[in-house]
Length: 162
Image 1 (cartoon, rainbow, N blue to C red):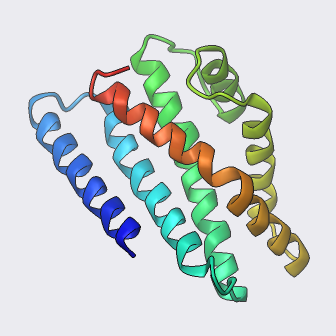
Image 2: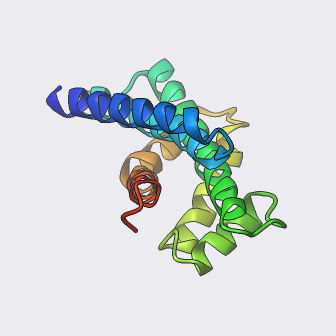
Image 3: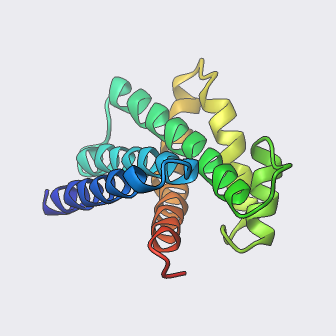
């Protein structure tokens, strides 16, 4: 529970910092999107932590899958906004964004991000408990960590540390 409280405090600090910065510079879209991305990653991690010991029920699993979909969508959209902020004006769509983000060193494992993209698309059309269980396992074992790494890296870039 302490880890969740720490994430909530970190999110609140990030949100307040971003809001205060936007009062003086409201044109930084990627930072606005970053705040939403950070919240989505924290929500996903909270859902995973709450169900780690006992395993999720059917509705909790659906919630985890939807939380992943939101975090993934905000990840690539935040990257897109960040890349545009860096001067890449022709970056549109998740595949193009992820390829450029990989080539620019913003994400480390291009194949894993491609798998996450496929999982997000599959998750949006789940009609089978077996698919949902497999996707939840993949989110828990493979997809959560890269989302957290990206949120941390973008946080450092926003703070001017990267």
